[in-house]
Length: 207
Image (tube, rainbow, N blue to C red; front, side, top):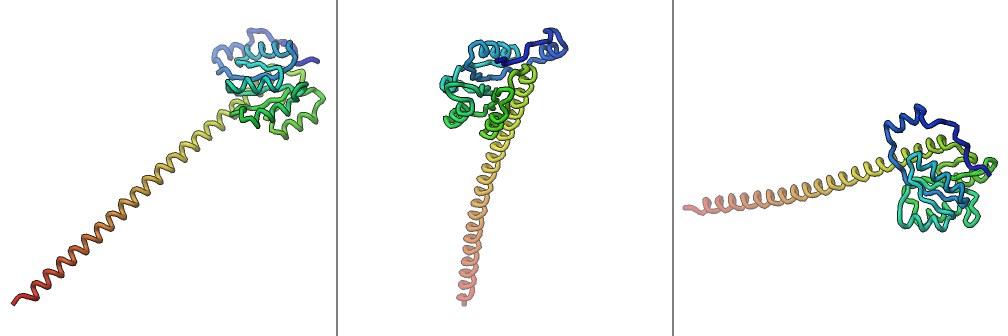
């Protein structure tokens, strides 16, 4: 089965020059593909597109790979024999090994039912065979950018929560200080009143 479209572009296009002029940050990607040739070719092409690809031939190997490293993208062939693509995704998530990674499924051209099932199961996107690497790259970059924005928003919210918590503590301390001041003022007023009463008593006792 054909996995990807043959490259028709030359190496010195304007797009390539733009990429070389402004290097993209390399993303970490886990590729789960049981076909040795397809796995090697896809990994090589992804490397040229600024991805550091970690390879796994089935879902169980993928789980072991994720124990020692985190990735930005998990690219899974849905036609895996040992552990199907959707089951692999579910096991990775159930094991708590996905982190912030986005799941992209590789589906057969006429496998629309499986695509729907994968998306309903939580996949973030999919590509169909044969796929174009430029299109795949664009979709992966979009997912990574969305994940970065969500992470930035999460960090911002966490910082805001921390500031609110600190402010609440400061306000609590200020309230406690005010209460202490009010108590001290009440004591002072009481002492002054007692002193005035004593002076009045002494004055009344004079002959």
